[in-house]
Length: 147
Length: 97
Image (cartoon, rainbow over all chains, first blue to last red; front, side, top):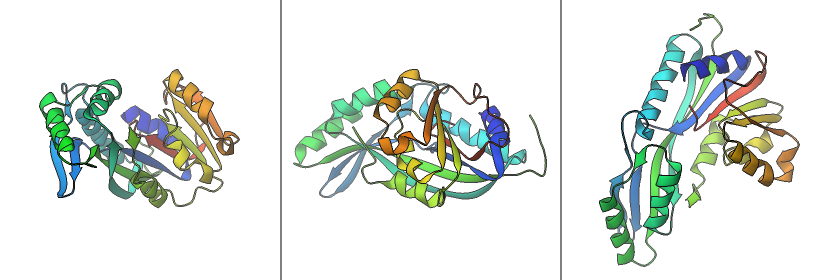
């Protein structure tokens, strides 16, 4: 990751900038939208510390901090937003997590609770919510630091 | 699965990428182009790369005609990309760092 950031630094023109969009290290939530409000029924967890999404995003935070500390970039702006993956059924979410999220797990108990809540109310919404950060960093030329 | 129908990601992108006119963008990890479609029409040109040839093929087959002229797709990674220094105005890591 740090190597990728160094390459990005080299490729940028002095007036350019780096943009990093990705989920934060906060686990994604499985949520059901009912008339009374949003109910969080579970979290997407890492299968293990090496390949899970939460650990991966935490490592990216460390790499970005290292790139700033080495003088390659200066942070300019940052914001966060909620990214929702809407589904019609818990089976759709289960298949999505298994097929698309490397090293992630969503326990069956949470899925069953979500299904029960969804059945309890017509029109109930179902989604996985991720907290996503987007950061803009400018290249810093004054140090010429390398790996 | 419907991804971000609320448009939160697009709004955030527009906030942090306020002016892309005439700018050359490198997007790292473009996948099937979901993110690319949200900003590329405002950029001068985009080089979008992804290590998954199937994703690049899918994106290439569905790229809107309005983007086809100024979005170049390549299978590869940031390690294999051979571009000279100072080639881009924006390097965008699209859920890929």
